[in-house]
Image (spheres, rainbow, N blue to C red):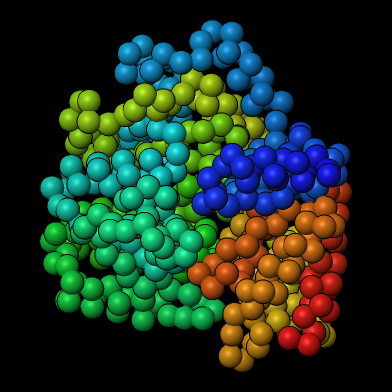
Length: 432
């Protein structure tokens, strides 16, 4: 029995069955490469689900954490605050595109950031309702699941969910609805289900993550901002997956030139350490009473040190520009692949910056989803030493999230494996 098989057996006997995993047991990783316990090397096109934007074990991030360990690892910010938290808040305030003076709070996970953003929006507006969008993913807590617009696997069997959460259609340039149809859905929601005067906030991802890397049309985000202003509703940008240079700008909303009131961030913020943040306009962020926000581990000193180093790396290594370049390379490669004879089951290639995906279908005319083919490509890539992730409400989208620090040779090698994996999977499904 191999070491991986032994670990798989031990995991089955020790870990809850609801915790879904892959069969790659990590031993070590560096930048865009990972080695398992058998010594097999993988190119990482997942980046820990957009966490390692600065790569695995970036020397500056590791150095900052090691330096912090020599001072203290935990005091609880509520008990004995520290300069690193304040400095990170100052930096996030300066870069968050709200158009005004900002304030920041730090917590630990993306879901926690989302929950706090909702708390703050309710405290400021004195309104209860929140509108999210179909296909959204906002976390696995009860409120996070309520906001999430994807039942399987996230919401199935876990209800009932908190009240006063509503969903509007998210525009989808491939399968629909159109932008106008999605906006009409919002108007119907106001007419049929919830008075806009009772809505505290809209929450939306500029590019849906789990939902399938669907890019919100910039004009839709502008119209949503106008609608929010008309009714005194706040606009929360969920930048958990899109933030930290992933889309070619620090935040995905910047592409649309739209200023949100509150921004949630996590994942790429601390280079592999658990940290999240809510940054927003000062008068909104200050609406909660003292003691109403926070948590024991909120703004952990090691994670804060890592995040300050991540911001340095993004600036020094020009990772926004690099994300744009990586995205163009991946997108052009996928589009060329899709145009080849026999590749008609690649239905759509899309993305923003280095957040790129392609959707698999049985037929381009009907757009019938091909989830089995999608799973085959992911499995084939894993055999060949490439880590890929699938996503989408129809389980038929493959997303590519390389570290933004990936070397040119490694990127090219990964794309070669990806192309070979698609060809092999298509060949295996030729008669399906």
